[in-house]
Amino acid sequence: MESSQARSAFLEGVRAVAALAVGALPFGLAFGVVAAASTAVPPLIGGLSSTIVFAGASQVALIDLLDSGAPWFLAIGTALVINARMAMYSGALATAFAEFPTRWRFGLPYLMTDQAAVVSILRFEEMTDPDERRWFFLGAGLTMWTPWHIATWVGVLAGGQIPASWRIDFAIPLMFTAMLVPSVRRRSDLVGALVAGIVTIAAIGVPLNLGLLIGTFTGIGVGMLVRDPEPAT
Image (cartoon, rainbow, N blue to C red; front, side):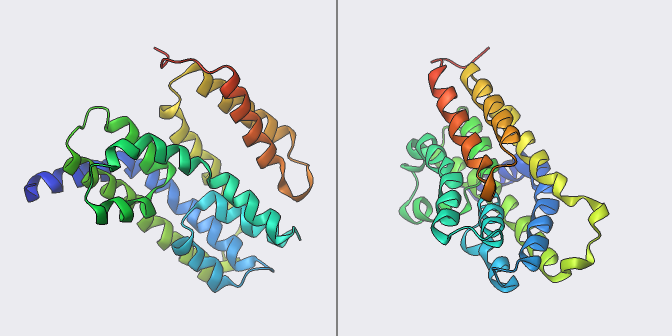
């Protein structure tokens, strides 16, 4: 593949998630502050989790559960369930990844995020060249990875110096909402997302923050029950 084509595909991936990457800054900052204030996880370990785990929602849930006194197996189990959606992304991208060279096929999944996966799934319907696809995914993945890490460490180092009045935690639901909208393509997707959101809000008072887990499973179950075979037009 010519370097100009690779660069073009890479930059297209960057542009595809650029707006969502901006949302990763306050999200990562919020997580860094949470990690710095944690009583169960040392700040250094919390910051390094962005590199080791690299799964924002799971990282937040894991630290929050540990701080609330939840057993370690429940905290880890919840994080795994939240991250189980990556298996669905992997299934959707498996055919495209199968055409990549081995080092790309095993390396690129580390950069898989909701944002990179969703834009790639949508773009790969039109982009059929394997070389362009892998450079596109690399651009999208790195564009999410970089600001997340920068913001995480700023949050860890700043700690309690960030005023609560800034309300940086608003970025977490905002970014996931922005990512969700283009991925809702079937009636079942919409119904499942709405049910998951409603149930999670209704279960907000459930001990050990299990409301998120309850809402997730309920949304998935309802979505499967009303599943329609073709994308909504």
